[in-house]
Image 1 (cartoon, rainbow, N blue to C red):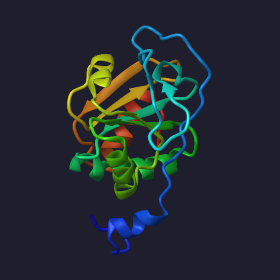
Image 2 (image 1 turned 45 degrees about the vertical axis):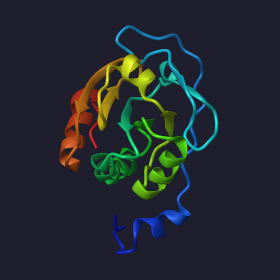
Image 3 (image 1 turned 90 degrees about the vertical axis):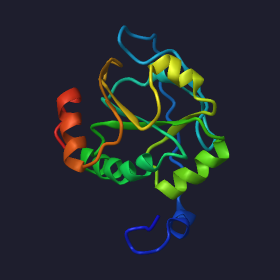
Image 4 (image 1 turned 60 degrees about the vertical axis):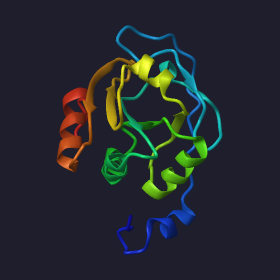
Amino acid sequence: MMADDGTSAAASSASYTIPTCPRPAPAAPVSGGLPDLRLPCLGGGPSVNLADLRGKPMVLNVWAAWCPNCDREMPLFADAMTRAAGRLRFFGIHYKAAEKFGERSAADFGVPFPSVHDEDGDRVVRALRTAAPPQTLFVTAAGRVAGRQVGEIRSQAQLDELVQRYLGVRL
């Protein structure tokens, strides 16, 4: 993959640092919300219980190191994060690959948000009823899953529309 400046992704990933996972306050799961599922932070740091991710609307992306569609989505998420200016949380779940492969791919893809890791994918599949990535869930500030996009988000306009529709935030 080539970076925007024409350098290879490997060259541009040399300065990349995996974003640090948050330390949310413990919260009980809510009906229709994220499950009580604790996963390790990709790249080290605190593990995160998905049910604890509350307080701010969230775009939750399930991605994988082996997923070219996931790679193509990352610039869209990075742009949306910048334009959201803190009004949204962006978070990821790295799915079905060795952690070290996920760390390298996070750098190569330029994953702009912190991510947790589920190496075999079984816990994520059961808890979130997901299939192959990419999948993006839109979670309200109260922790309820308001919607999901199965498959690649193909444009900034599509992502903006999904955020507006499910989370009520205009980017």
